[in-house]
Structure formats: structure tokens, C-alpha cells
Length: 371
Image (cartoon, rainbow, N blue to C red; front, side, top):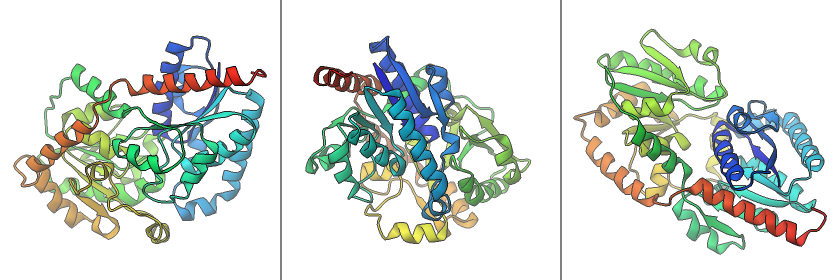
């Protein structure tokens, strides 16, 4: 069968590659066209556009790039029509993918959405788009199950693929380090590096008994980081899990990385600094109390959240001392992590996602002779 996949970010590329492998294990004749990245390209041929060409985040940045976004949408629609897939699989990236869902459904293609848009946090009206244009919604957070019951969308909770991947990694790797590590995960976009990395790096002068290591993000180059580094801070690429498995603590840009860090049982400070205008606009719409996935899943502040002006050198220094070995918040955070891990007990989530999607395509074949 034919699968068209749209992954607009580095995390989507990772999930997309694993999903493609799981589909191939169940459908040996599968063929793909996709927007994705290097990991998906290593899994199977069919890359049309790399996510590096799509990465835009923030209200101001989106407005400044409307022409580029419009062109990307047009190109993606043309590619879908040319490929004539049995199903269009959309991975996260809602600003773009919800438009593709509508187009795909109106043009007679089945649609599956893997990693649901966070409509429980903001832009709840997007759930109506899911109702109308998405045939299968695959959920990865336990609390989403009850939330989506109030919407007429075919949703299935499959478990969280990050939890499974990290559990597997931890069981096959040792976690020794010559010098205590503080991991820095400043985000996967250039504007995040510019706003956050200089402050993270400056912190290294106050903790000289530790080594600070920046985990380079897929899609970025070493040259993107060098202007912000000093002689006391290293940078590595393609070693994030290895670094986290050895780290004593971490400072993490809000997003998927905060959940990954928690699954590694690494005490962390979760931070974010956005364009001021974008943040003011976002505050008008955001409905949730927390910005980190860890706190959202636990429904309390288990890890500190440092947003905007709170993300400063003095606060970071004080808060980091609290979560290092001997710090007064470390043990409680590790206890909270145990509770978090108990929420994610589903096994083989990616395989379940592949099974559900293949089932959807087969129902398409049965009901649409043209395929």
C-alpha cells in the first residue's frame, strides 16, 4: 500500500522513521512519499522535502514567512495528488498538517493523525477540524483519552513511543561519566538557540566541578551553536540519549525534551524564552497551567518552569543547586518521576500505531475499488 507522511520537525522525523519501520514489518510491499528528514530517508526511499525547509515557530515568525508557508502547502498538496496514497499520515506539526488533513479528506484520501494536536492546551476549535477531516487520531498521552471523548473523532491511545525507546536504551547502556554532567538542551530552532543558549552557557562559570554538554539538535549544524559557546562547554551531536543517561541534571527547553529527560530520571529545569509579541498573543489562547509535558501529565509543578524574565542567570544558578546531588528538591523530583513513569506502561506503541493505520488503509481498499 501507499503511504504519504508529513513530518515537519526533527521529532516528527524520529517518530516517522520508527513508524515507517513498523509499517514495513507488517506491510512488506509498502511504498512511501514523505516530508521528513534524514532518519526517515535512512528507513525507506521517498523523501520529497526536508523538514529543515519548514521549521517556523511563533506568531511573528509565521507572519513573516506566510509566502513560504503558502508555497510549502501548495507543493505538499500537489505531491499528494501525484502519489495517490492509500492514506495520508500526519505527524504533529498542527499549523501545517491540519490544513493538509482537510485537503486530503476533501480529495478522497483517508487520513491518520499520529501525535494529536495539543488542542487541550490551546486552539480548542481545531478539534472540530479533527472531527471533520481525520479518520484516525493516535494518542500518546494518557490524559488525552478522556479529553477526546467529548469530540466525535475516532481516537486510539497507543502509549508513548519515547517511553518505550528510552526504556530500551537504558537497559542496553551503562551510565558512567568521568566528571558530573549537566546537559543543556536549548531547543531545535535557531531562534531558540539565540534566546536561550547564551544564558545556559554563562551558567558554566559557577559550576566548575561539572562539565556542561550541549546536546545538538537534528537539523542544526555546529556552526549554529559556536557563536554562543565558551571554552568550558562542549557540544555533541547524535548523542542526546547517551548524555542524558549519564547526566546529574539538565536545563531543557520546553517541549518533548522535558519528557525525555524525565524518562531518564534526570532532575531538570524546564525553561522557555519566546519573542515577546508572540508570547503576549499566546497568553490570550493558552488554557493550561503548565508549559512542560512533565507537569501537564502529573497535573502539578513537579519540575521548575522558568519562562521569559524568570529565565535568567541568577535564577538558574539558584535553581540548579537545588536539583544537583545533595540539593533540597532532587529527591522529590525523582519521586515524581516514578509516578510519571507509571503513567506510561503501554508496550509497543509504534507497532500499535502501524497496525491501526494499516487497518485503516485496508478498510479504504475494501470501500474504494479505485484503489
